[in-house]
Length: 90
Image (cartoon, rainbow, N blue to C red; front, side, top):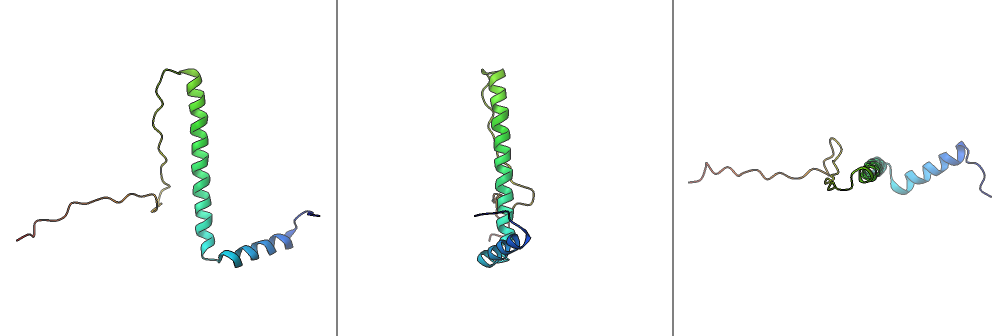
């Protein structure tokens, strides 16, 4: 029933996706998907290294892990509270 997908079928699927989500949302969705894949990959790598570390030295406490935002990622940035300028008070 479902044979091989050729070029016409793939083009049709891409056109339907563009019509459903719109051309403006597709780059954002791809960026989010890439970011999720990077996080998943780093977490899997950390879990794998933790498993190897636990087998060799079980007495060491695990180090806290942090997930770093991608360079230029504004959504992962934290706001910084800057001191207010109080030199102009009367």
